[in-house]
Length: 294
Length: 314
Image 1 (tube, rainbow over the protein chains, first blue to last red):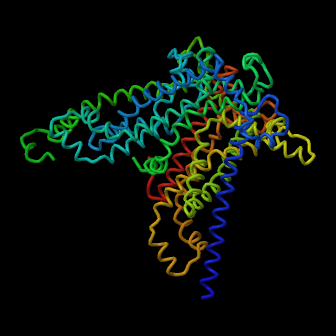
Image 2: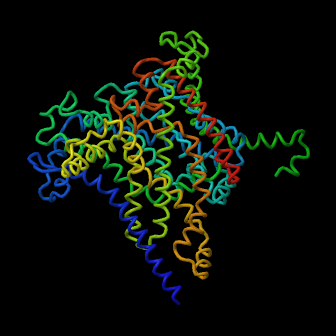
């Protein structure tokens, strides 16, 4: 009997250890985000340390930084460009990914192995930055929004997740349509795609988040200030110490510059925070599908 | 499939193949869209990589520039920054691995064992989220903590009577900022694959263990951790395959001139030499060096994974 009691105690300690660990992890995750968030709401006349700022009562918060950003021409234009990149990018990426995933999912397709090889070679061997840069500039894509999403419009990883999803759809549905004389294209459009809404949404959002966050392609290929997306503007705001050519003091009004910096990243993250709950439930499933062999 | 009908045909196998090809003609039609994309955006760059062996001149183009053999490669290997770049790149890859994989294993096991539903769901949601934040956003968050004027960490230092430290531009602290901020951002996402493996454990093992009177600690030690050991090995080998990718976006966003000596990795160097200094041939050679080495590493790690699990990645 004594043994069992000791075991229960040790189990209790085990769960205390696990739960305390998780609470600690939660704190480590939340504190930096909270301190940035409170920084973005800090009023211009705030006196005190950053720690005081973290515990400033919400009714003393100032939305000046957000109002300044949302009323500013270059911020609105950057947000518009980012939304265009998001939607055009997702449409383009799905347009190229879906047919590929579908072709790879048909086990009886002659030449499937060859197609798989063609997809895999660039995945395993990356020739590097400059050869890609030469291609994109040669195609005349400089100073177009397409330069941000077109070079990365097909991700092999996303294609394989989608392919696994197509393979899992019941074979009888496809077969019965084929017996009725439907072509493979009709099977794809009429049967596969309507059943694949969840995976199209998930993969679409994966691509979308990636394009929304990208600053590297935008930095490489876009010089025209009118075409700059949010990450580039954000980067310019963040790297400006004080006020420089990118951020004129008068342009952003009453808010302190550090609040502008913090507020700009939260505004830029909002679309992702909205998309996040929709994709979260597919994370574990997607990881398992992605690890299935082709 | 083709018995009976094929008796009269001269070459039944090829006939059946043709029929299968014709039956799938619309698939080829739609797949050709993706195929053309791959040729243009994935294979032309591979063709362009030949400028690593040329003295690239923009006016003469990729095929018109004169051959220089391995000059670009020897320039790189013999330069003083060669070992510094390799060292920094491998240091950051291995350092991130050393922190984020144990953290991810702990997080996955803790989430799996946690009996408090609300805590589990909250931690899961918060832990996956940073993966979707770009490094531009991460930089703003790091500023809120580390900035000498507004950062909370410097606030604490000042409260204890210390002098504020400019962490981001100090070679002593910069490597830690890179490794720890990556751990903060990616641990939750890395934990997913371990969590998926834990979901696959046969529950009867735990029942048997509790009948035998095993404690929770023993359960973790003898069932849970052995169950995810193969996944840990696969993840380690996968990371080995990408050891030369030390995280361009992160370093590029965080580094500045004072910390170049400890911050510069192969990718940031390629960017500065190739795009900012127009040394296309040299930058391509370094990129190709990295690409070929990366290919070798992936092939080797895939071989090891295949030997270990019986299943390869491709």
